[in-house]
Amino acid sequence: MDRDNARYMKDEYLKIIKTYLGQLQTAHTPDISPAIQRYTQNSNLKSLSFFYDTLLKRSTFLDYGIPKKPIVGYFCNLVPEEVIYAAGAVGVRLCSSDDVCARLGEEIIPGDFCSMIKSSCGALFTRRYDNLDLVVVPAACDGKLKLAEVLSPFKEVYFLDFPRDSDYLKNAEIWTQKYSQFAEFLRKRYNARVNREDLLNACKLTNKRTDIFRKIYSLRASHPGIINAFDYFAIASASFVCEANIWSAYAEKLYKEAQYLAGNKPDFKGKKILLAGSSIIFPNYKILDILNELGCDISADTTCSAYGRMYDPVEIDEDTQDGILRALSLKYIAASMCPCFLGIDKLIDRIVEIFREHSLNGIIYHNLRLCQVFEMQSFALRHILKDKGLPFLFIKTDLSKEDTGQIKTRIEAFLEMMR
Ligand code: SF4
Ligand code: SF4
Image 1 (tube, protein in one colour):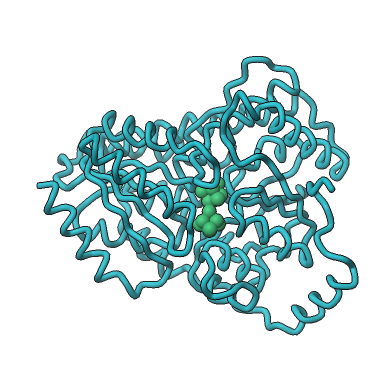
Image 2: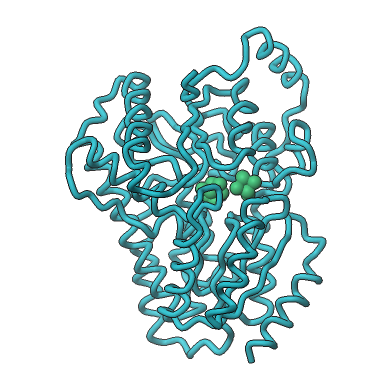
């Protein structure tokens, strides 16, 4: 059976699950306003308010403020947003790392499961999925695979299945075919064209976003602290729920304001850290809070909520429909540093390249507890980076605040070692 867009449960079983879930209480949406207020006060930039407002307004996910367009929720960086735009819909990335939602998710998912999956399930109880027309789940880790099944009683789920090997030459044709089937599915669903021109226009939208994101990324690395790490990940998290053209317009304003400040601010005296590993998504800022308290700046990252999401452009060699879809697969899958795919070399190469290019001081690899794939690759990273003389610290944590003191002590020792 081709699992793409398959039904994952018999009607009879779905009915039982729906009845049970109907009895569960809808929970209150977590209140993120105290966090918004706190980080807004920490910010140097007035134009940041748009991004924090976006996070606040969309935090209920009940009103995306997107008139008359179907909203397609998706997980991960492996789903091509451009195909969703080309179908006249808007993509909203649903990856969540909200601790309140993770605890709600334990109604459905075992407690000793990755908090990203629990949080994504818990979001169901806050009615975050109500306005979505469809949910797209890619074949990343096993948790994501089962998430497709768990969400299917609530929403139609499109499952994007591909080989978990990021070798472009070996897999480009399969990925292109999978993206083409996805485009065909959206074409029928939304009675849309999704032709070459629509795809090209959508690529222009996301490439514009990449242009401005790259400028911000490089300004942060060369002038630490102007756009601090809290702001940076708020900008990135806002891109999950904001149309690319609107995000780009506000990000351009922000960049201009930051550029102006960069000429007038004293030099940064703390350590410049590269953050790799599990995503940072607002409001899960525990690691950022600790580093800020210790006077460091995360001046660069490779996480899939920020760098991994927006740094790579779509590079089209052949502007036929298949050529564009192939270019999308290169951007989203072949270049992906997702640990669910074979091919850790590119993550190590990127870390070394970014570290040297921006003269950083150390690397912190953030591992969300119970995520085996991120944890398993830490062994290779630790030894290879050590061999190259790059200071490396592995931190395993979850969404709770209980281990804050312990992590702080370990980072202090790491900073001490770098002196
Ligand atoms: S790292 Fe991989 S599994 Fe995790 S959110 Fe990113 S693309 Fe998905
Ligand atoms: S890759 Fe890891 S963090 Fe991401 S959903 Fe899977 S288990 Fe969770």
